[in-house]
Length: 98
Image (tube, rainbow, N blue to C red; front, top):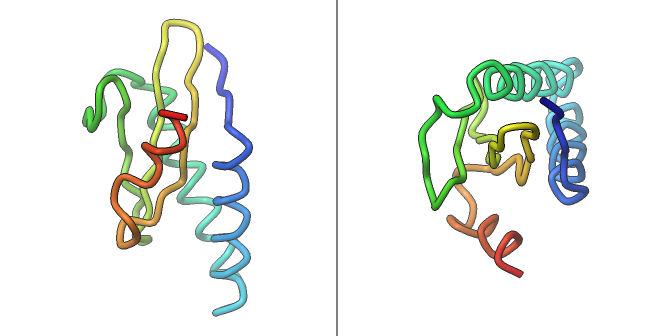
């Protein structure tokens, strides 16, 4: 299975990591570790996480108010968004419907 990260999702991750690092030295690194753990969990069990919309699934980050939104297929795990849970709900869905 391959992991494919949409460019918008990658930018969300980088922006959030930079924001956390600006708040406290090392916090950006901890955020990146939480993101890696979420991706690893989705990779290990792609069809085992909560289905939130059609076939899209979600993994919650530990210690941070973020979710990994992804679409599992038989040979690919498509990362759609690293989504802040307190921002506009469903905004990530606009990205995949366009």
